[in-house]
Image 1 (cartoon, rainbow, N blue to C red):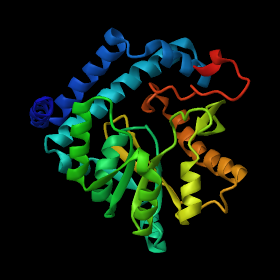
Image 2: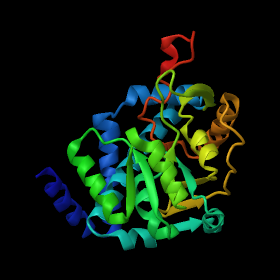
Image 3: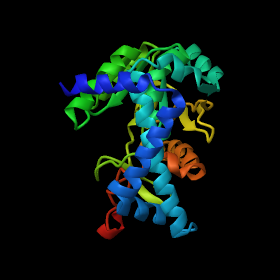
Image 4: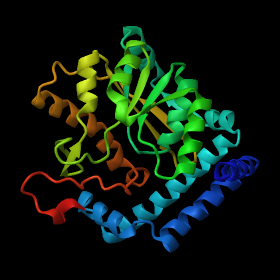
Amino acid sequence: MMVWMLQKIARWVARLPAAKAAALARFGGMLLARVVRLRRTYVLGALARSFPDKTSAEHRAIYVEMCRQQALNAMDLLRYAGGCEAELSAHLQVQGLEHVAAVQARGRGALVLTAHFGNYALLALLVPRLFGYPLAIIAKPLKNRTLNELWWNLQDRAGVHGIPAHNAYRASVRALRRNELVGFMIDQNRPAGQGVFIDFLGRPASTTPGLAVMSAHAGAPVLPVLIRREPDGRQVVEVRPPLDPPPGRDPETVRSFTAACSRIIEEEIRKRPEQWLWLHKRWKSRPPGEKRSEAV
């Protein structure tokens, strides 16, 4: 029932002119920031620790704009669900497609390194259309059952193969051996003992070693792909040169490779902090001996 209602809303917003839909989303983002105050205290604390050189006013401005960006992302997904796939694709600019062809020519597939940055969900849905290659993504089920059902339906429609997180490693290696693309995010916290600590925005952050381990095991290159929204409303998909697989799976090699991949994401966040999803507790797990109070 709830999925049916969301689909009806999606069809309605899909009929709106793009400019009106964007204006409605920006208004919704303002409500999230000013009225709902979505995780405001946590986000402002994280911004203060990550950007100590910025003023409190600048931190608040980033928070407000982040809320607007998330609302715009949600509107894009609703319009996609309502049938605006071609329109959304037409307003995307893709840079670096030659890197996709290069990794596919190697015949070992590629691990697509991305992050909760820009409209990352729309990026996943459009990759098969934009790149011309199958995509599998590793994802946990969403807590909201209605949204989870809608999201998996959208993936099926887009030709994206969802890999449940509990069976991710073997399924991902099989996809790579079929010369497919496998999406991988490394910008969320891992529980203590399951991640490697690397520097992220100036603080140690527990990060999944899975990308490095899988790349070394399968001999698959890592292809950084990020999407960003420009001030004029255009969205740009940037494909960067691939990273060769690490030479081994020993702890130091894995940590070093993970850190190198994370720096690519950090570089974009420092340029456009409002486009990263600051709502997640990225620094929740702490290194041994560090005070719990520093987990913000």
